Image (cartoon, rainbow, N blue to C red; front, side, top):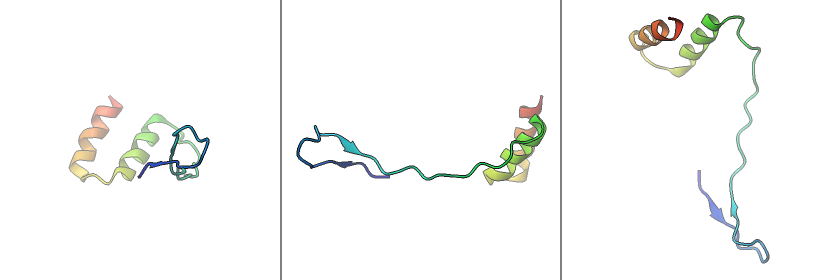
Length: 59
């Protein structure tokens, strides 16, 4: 992400930030355990690491 100075007259030296990417939200998980599973599935970490995180997040 780059931040570009605005060079327009009367801008007051403001910075122009790029627009944020909009990500549509899916339906919320039914339970905390389901939310943990959804999160761990989307992280792309190794199965052994996901197992440790799962234990930590659900206890």
